[in-house]
Length: 180
Ligand SMILES: O=P(O)(O)OC[C@H]1O[C@H](OP(=O)(O)OP(=O)(O)O)[C@H](O)[C@@H]1O
Ligand SMILES: Nc1ncnc2[nH]cnc12
Image 1 (tube, protein in one colour):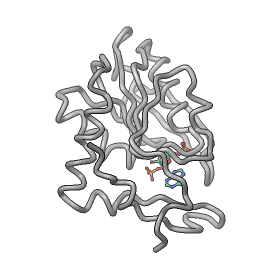
Image 2 (tube, helix red, strand yellow):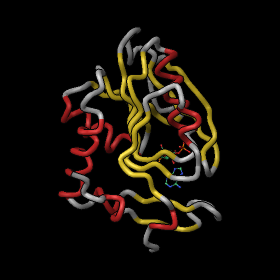
Image 3 (cartoon, protein in one colour):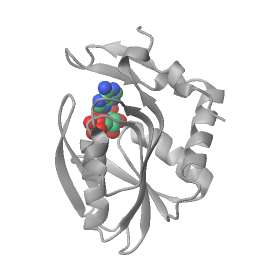
Image 4 (cartoon, helix red, strand yellow):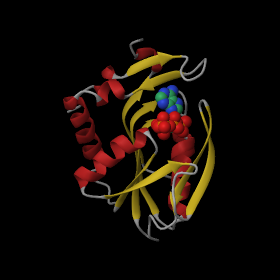
């Protein structure tokens, strides 16, 4: 049963730039029951998918991706912002709602043919997930699914991920959220 965690998200206007409506997940994470419910809901949402490892993107993706990997007894692969990984990497630059970013993944993090779930806190315009899936595929692995806590309605992030099985726990309309 849904715990309506979307009602606990904080919505901040004009952060980190004017014109951006920022969805803050820390209001969910800081409560032990809510954090537990979030991971349980993510686990239920991907229970039918067959995968070997979870890949998640720095930084917010790490929080839920690693908790989910731990509870599901899967390996965890970090996709990091540029310059943080010490060994040979695959690399991709992409656009965000509020700028540009480069992400990297170790070349030896995934084996050819492995099945991978990409997990992130939020789907906005979809650049992060699209770039991460390209990194996964560069390694010869297969994207078994893409899973989000929150999907921002109206930004059409899904349109960039039509090749994949994309799931989100909550479709959030920015107008529905409380202001802080
Ligand atoms: O669908 P998109 O438009 O790509 O946006 C979603 C991404 O943006 C945020 O990360 P951000 O790059 O801001 O990094 P952070 O987790 O370090 O805050 C969020 O955690 C997602 O990874
Ligand atoms: N509007 C938004 N709120 C929170 N995180 C984001 N990442 C990209 N767009 C975002």
